[in-house]
Image (cartoon, rainbow, N blue to C red; front, side, top):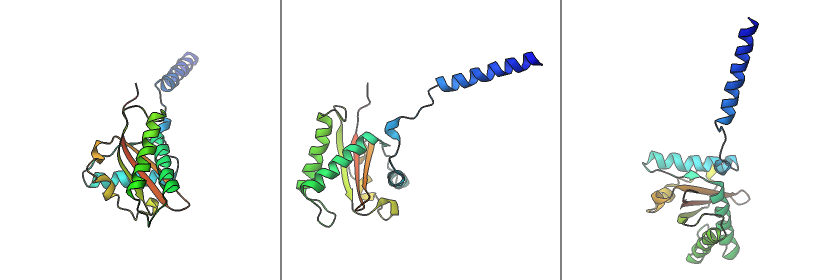
Length: 165
């Protein structure tokens, strides 16, 4: 009986070691910063899926770029009833390009959709249809989200990010 217990203990230790060595880790780039961001991503992906559209995976790196794009829009030009002008569009695109130039995103990254939502997405009042029905949305493989809790604006960015080598 003692021999059986020892063999069982050794077998359990082996199973635990295999579990650890199997790489049961989570990519930190795919972890949501907040429940609000998680809910906004779920709302986007669920509604897109319901209408037959695919969606990209969430990325914290792209979300930090979404924050820079939001800052470029709000800092340089401000908001006009939640709409932004062509100048703001240029500022957002420049912020994305700077992230690629600075190495925050890999070379070859392409911005397809940058959309500023003017009401808190966590409340479910935004239908996201204008985002995922954009003609270029399907070319994106990655989604980044930035939520400004003080004013309720949500920046949604859909981009193609090449796989890292």
